[in-house]
Structure formats: structure tokens, C-alpha cells
Picture 1 (tube, rainbow, N blue to C red):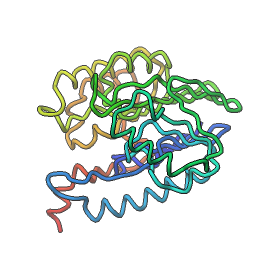
Picture 2: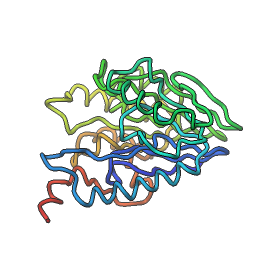
Picture 3: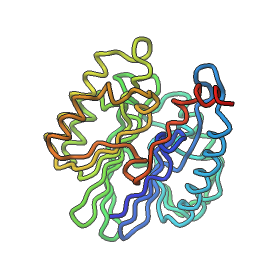
Length: 285
């Protein structure tokens, strides 16, 4: 199984776009965006350049992929208007059930755009698929972070091939919830791609209790599954001091000789947290 993170927050943009190649070619969450404001500042020139660069890479991989999956309808997880959906097999979050109003509206606009251009479309929530020797399981809809999140629902994706398993669990923000955690544990992955807890918002949009629950659930995943690598990225790394907030997790991973790292580090690159560093980037202009 070949796993290639294409665009992530540790690579300088908001995204979790990931290419997976088994005996089929799959692109998960083909979207890239930027935070409109951070510290009261718009994206820097460097972020805009990185957006263009990584958008082109995602589009390139989308063209060669057989299958595209979309976990939910936030713009950092799909391009609302792109030509690469034509003749593809789409596995999609259900646009009408377990969905909040803003995502429902965006999904409707997206379906108006793609019309009948994909070869096939399937709503994936809670369903299992098999293509050649590759199995793809989708979770039931889970909350976008905390219980009853106003941001709606997402679906996690599990891909199995030749005794190896990857789970792509974007925007579960932690995971904070037992149901989400238990689904990951039951799937028992070798590699887990996970959107971490949004520690940036501690004290006003995120609670210390939520962060502690996230760490507790991460420890359960480390100790109760065969996972050897957790790519922990996206919301978490918008906090420059994120490592201080997940010390128990990093300590346990080291003890177990397991890896907890960013997408950039998984690729052997130095992370570039451009959004988190926006203030200092502007200060150098």
C-alpha cells in the first residue's frame, strides 16, 4: 500500500488530501484551502503560493486516480468546482442525511456542478465496498469534533489491502468521542491519519476537558490497536505549541516504539506551519 499525503496543514495549507495506491488508485478528500483570517491577518504571499502549488498537485493526482472520496463538504476537503470529477467513481458523504445546513447547501451546489459527469456516485455513510482486492469501509456519520457539533458530521474511511490497513479520520478533532474512537479501534489500522484536537481554541471554543478526552482516546488507540504510525495533523498543528498539549501521547508512543508525527514528517520533510506562523511571517515583510 502506497500512502502519499499531498496537502496538509504541516505542508502549509488547510487540507488532508491523501493519495492511496493499492491495486486501485484512490484520492481521499481532494481539496485545499487557507484560513481567511489569523491574528486578524489575511493569508501571506507564501501561503497563497503554497495553495497554488499544492492545489495543482492534488489536481494532478485526482486525474490519475480511479476513485475519489469526500468525507464532508468543507472546502478544505473538496474542490466545489473542478473538472477532475468527470468519469471518476465518487464515494461521498450523504448530502441529505446527518448533515448540517451549510454543508447541505454546499453539497447541493456541488451536485449541481458535477451533474452526471462522474462514471458513478455512491453515498458511502456506514457502507463497505470492494474493488479488485481492496476493501474500503466507511464509518457511520460521526460528529465533526465534539458531541452535537454545529459543524455537522463527517465519515471516516478505512482501506485494506494485503493485510495492511489505513484509516483516514479527518475532522474528528481528537478523537473526542467514544463512538469515533471505538470505530477506529475495531478497524485496527496499521496507519491512522487523524485530525487532532483544536488546541488553538482552548478556553473559548474548545475545553480542557475535551483536550484531555482526546489524549485519553489517543492513548487507547495506541495501546489497543496494532497501529504503528499516527499522522496527527490538520486542526492540531494550527497551534505552534501543539506538542506541549499532547505530551502524554508522545511519551506513550515513544515507549511503544510507535510513531506520532505530522504529514510533513511522514514524507521526510520539515513541517511548515504557515498559518500558525502568519504573524511572524508578516513581521518580516
